[in-house]
Amino acid sequence: MTLENGENTGANRGQEPVKNRRPLATRSAGWAKALARGLAAAGLTPNAISVLGIFFAAAGAWAFIQAPYGSQWLWLGGALGIQLRLLANMLDGLVAVEEGKSSATGALYNEFPDRIEDALLLIAAGYAANEPELGYLATVFAFGTAYIRALGGSLGLEQDFVGPMAKQHRMFLLTLGAIAAFGASYLAANERLLVSLPRDVIEWTLLLIVLGAAFTCTIRLHRIAKLLRAKEAAE
Image 1 (cartoon, rainbow, N blue to C red):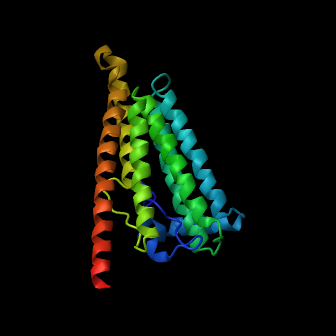
Image 2: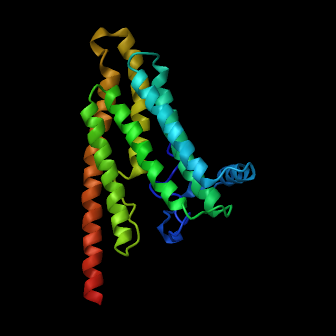
Image 3: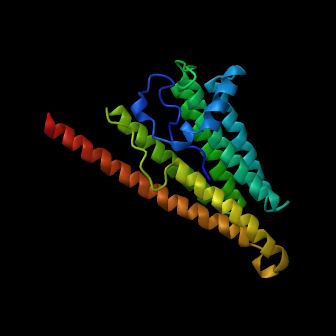
């Protein structure tokens, strides 16, 4: 269900090379290119689209926080916020690269909003699960995966988008968790013993994200170290 490939979709928006863009089938879809052309024609810059993604994430975060106390449809609102955030993440890169709208600050706007969006959604999911510490922990490891990726790039290596819990995987899992919580809310409405089920679903989702992101950090560090040793041996 995710619409965006992971971190750094808008690579080459500033000075980053195209090789650091992960191949994404959705990026070449006709509807995506048409939408990017429309946004560019409307005067929207890649940076503005990146900032728009923050508002989508904030709306999704609000839905997560309110869902345990309001309509069960708010769980789907959280899922929608995630997907719209990812759509913005994809389109900013398309408008920058395909429509020739890149700028000197493009790489900055591409990365920093991503971290805000991750934090908004994961922390809000933690509060929705009544386990805020888990949301903060998921955010720490999500930041870790992005930091290690960028660290590899700063060391002269190609940025490594490997999973199993890169951004697209985290957001896909959180989307599924929100949809499952929506379904669980119907059971909770009819069975008092299941009243905490939607929150339990989000809690388990966040736990999987934490464990997967921690594993991803380990894998990326190992791969960077291996490449650096091979580079040293070749010199």
